[in-house]
Image 1 (tube, rainbow, N blue to C red):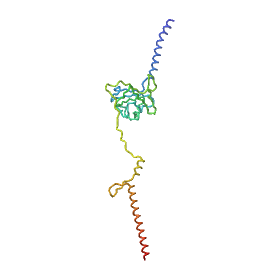
Image 2: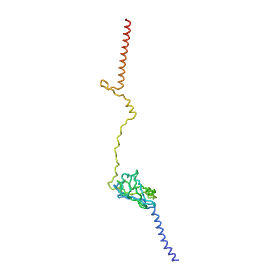
Image 3: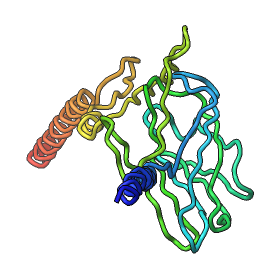
Image 4: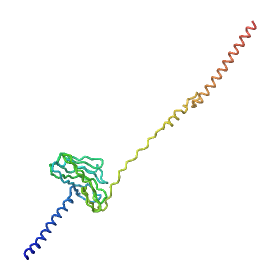
Length: 246
């Protein structure tokens, strides 16, 4: 009786240790990093920083062919240049980040590459949402950003930043001179301009408007017509007088 009781007491710690190891293994699985990022100078406002990314291969049928990254606020696509990547992989800027890829990697091979960022923004952390595309078309989305210490199923690579170095200042936004407004004439103004009288030079050298020219011409025509009437009347009267005298 004593021996069996002693054996049961010895078995209980062993079973407890095995159970603890199983629980630890189950707990460690979900929190394993699938995509991560590190920095050569993880300080806010640091310049010419090398960011190294790693994406764990999860497919058993194909290798990683492309990684699509959405840049966090404060890093423009044109501020990122490729430093090191798998052979034949190239980096292409996109409207909200960049894509890097090429010949699919061997199945089970993790994707690792590094880029150079002109300057990091003034922030406490930077999230790089990433889409992994495999050679067979499968896509893994690591785009969730944990908050308030909560755990997520598909965490995005997050870079925690330290305080900026003394004297570091953000880059001043580029200012380009605004184009000078080009003067234009509206249709109504153009119509008014076309309807304005055109100056006509007079014999005296004074510029006369078309209205003044028209009124002067009308006066001359009237005088000439009156003279012609008087001449005609005189001729008619002279002819009648000559006939009556004969």
